[in-house]
Image 1 (cartoon, rainbow, N blue to C red):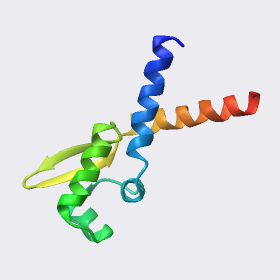
Image 2 (cartoon, rainbow, N blue to C red; image 1 turned 45 degrees about the vertical axis):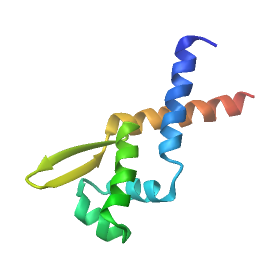
Image 3 (cartoon, rainbow, N blue to C red; image 1 turned 60 degrees about the vertical axis):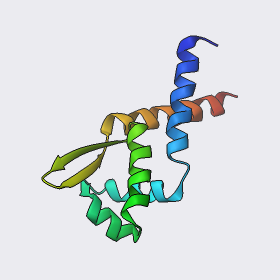
Image 4 (cartoon, rainbow, N blue to C red; image 1 turned 135 degrees about the vertical axis):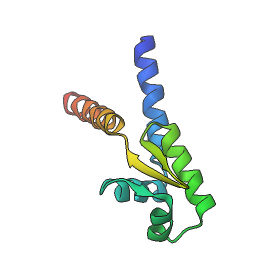
Length: 100
């Protein structure tokens, strides 16, 4: 396997690890509707801020989210480039499965 292939597999593992939790998938679903502040996400998921922050940190570390601060609020949004990368990854797997 080439180093590029190994790097791509490592990136895929990072993304899929971030997606391996139901709460994080719920966050992505909420953020697909547009940018939201932590307070709104906390209310929507009916969870504590510390637990939510852990999940947001995991998604951000995987590059799936962007954030911006406005005063005392932090707003999160999906990272379009990462979502495109995820689509390409799944598309590649789908293509390989067809030819196997």
